[in-house]
Picture 1 (cartoon, one colour):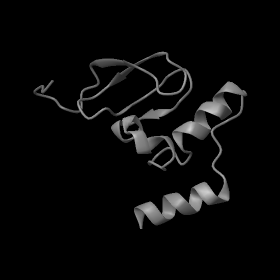
Picture 2 (cartoon, rainbow, N blue to C red; picture 1 turned 180 degrees about the horizontal axis):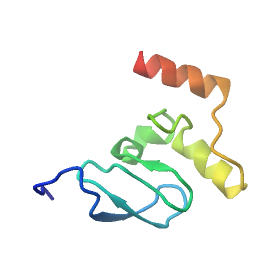
Picture 3 (tube, one colour; picture 1 turned 60 degrees about the horizontal axis):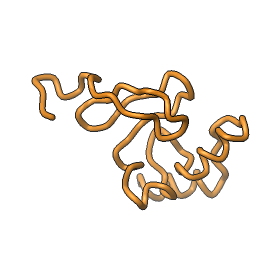
Picture 4 (spheres, helix red, strand yellow; picture 1 turned 120 degrees about the vertical axis):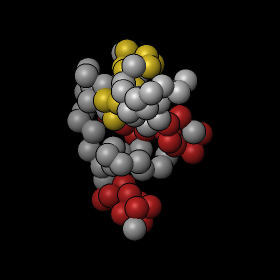
Length: 88
């Protein structure tokens, strides 16, 4: 759906982590008010479950486990290095 304001968060979707309702823009970006996970279309790809995507420096699969266990989204040293390599 293309709108006059592509960065306006007016598309409803479920959070990738906690399944609460999130408003995202045309590019799939938004932040969940419940768990604070930054939504991204790159997470929706099958590879996105294990790769790092800024600003979330924790892979989606690991973040789901951390959320389920009541832990904050905390990257490991390996996650940090993978993010650095991806964005450098």
